Image (cartoon, rainbow over all chains, first blue to last red):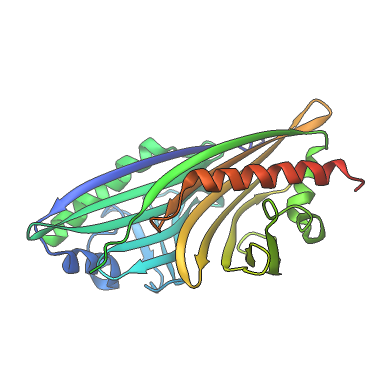
Length: 151
Length: 153
């Protein structure tokens, strides 16, 4: 691709779950709990690398729709405050192309007996492969899966 | 339990420099060139490592003269030579995380010189942090970059 574009975008998603902050946080911190909801559609071929949930630790996941190129998620954890906050940066690739770099902040706040979660993503979308709108829709889908996993 | 604050924000700065895109890119890529301008105002850098490549990580300790309490760790996420640099970084003050940022530098030719678009997206993690201070700091740094580019290469 000859034109090297970079388009910036931000979105914030908010959910309230009936589970306590400790349990919602664990769904992000524990690799087995996270695998229950942070997953590609069922018909994708999927592989998971080691998840190192610590500051500076990495997480890697890849998957491909039937007959299509690999989608790769590569994250590095920047900040972890137990039961309160997680900050990480992640890159997405499709095949050999890097399509985005995003800074994600997840905040967990007690709300009655449950938890209010705010997920903010500040991203740069590269070379026209993706945009903030479609990433927001995809992330909403993941939070729907989280909601189902917490039930 | 102390609640931690997190403020999100962004700003975009633009500059035109009378230097070709390759020279402007080199001012970021080449350590000896970047050292001429990469701290704001009268602040000083007291420790610095360089690793300008995709996946490369750098450390910079800086602050007011005599009190270099800020430590920035930067990772290069994307580099398109002569055109684009995307980097993520964290800043700590006395080991307390104060921000995580995503910076995009875009370079394009403009007449005989070049245009730089600098986009700063950040989450500020300490109540005392203000985005406007970060913006002032980067305005100062980009002005110093202009001075460095005006000097003989």
